[in-house]
Picture 1 (tube, rainbow, N blue to C red):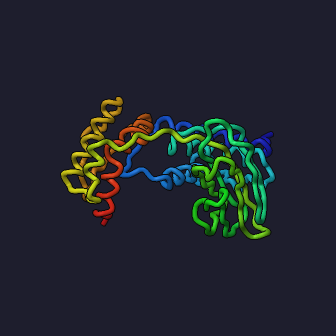
Picture 2 (tube, helix red, strand yellow):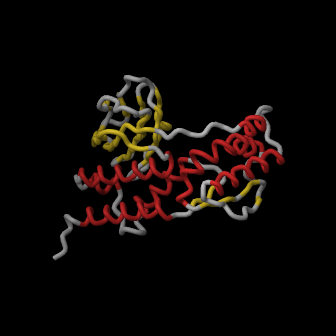
Picture 3 (tube, rainbow, N blue to C red):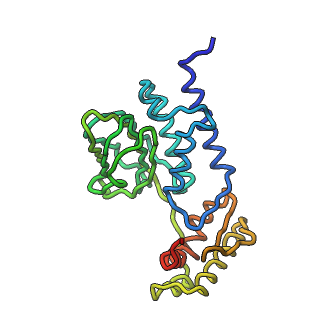
Length: 269
């Protein structure tokens, strides 16, 4: 006889496997990296259910299976750190299922930690706000039930370790928090500094900076191939195993500041 008790664990295992495979094999295509894109990918895997038969965070929480909710949120956190931030989790995480306003205290900051990774999901609809010390975390607003929303935040002070949530007294939610460490990002090259010194980006500067980005990626072993220019932007792609080199080295050093100026001056039609 099939066990309904084991079904959530089975589905969570398939979700985790799918997320890991996505991190390791998925091609990346972007004009500009953005955290919300990655969170949307995580949400699609966790909430959509097309790959797994569908266990949402809300369903797990509603079933009272605390370990299932914690496992799902930890998976989301690991995905966000590996795919978006390229940092690492440090120390033991804190997980709580709560309702109404609450304060969550993290353990003392481990050596090397300079940020926190937060995953928040609501079991009941409501408008929530979150703060890390005095710093607002994300934007206060309605929570989409069952959607684990993850992001890393720089810590406020050397001693701060208080995370607070404000929301309706009866609305249930879950929070997963861990200390984390951000990678060291490359500084902008002298060429890029010169290109952005006047606060503008010409087409020649945009193209020259992009050529340096391509050269950097090729040197790192992740060539981008022939890249089309469409809608006043280079539409580029690279294999997912090149994301660390792109996000922490090549993009910030050779292209990010120019790309930001260019996109601000040439919004998508």
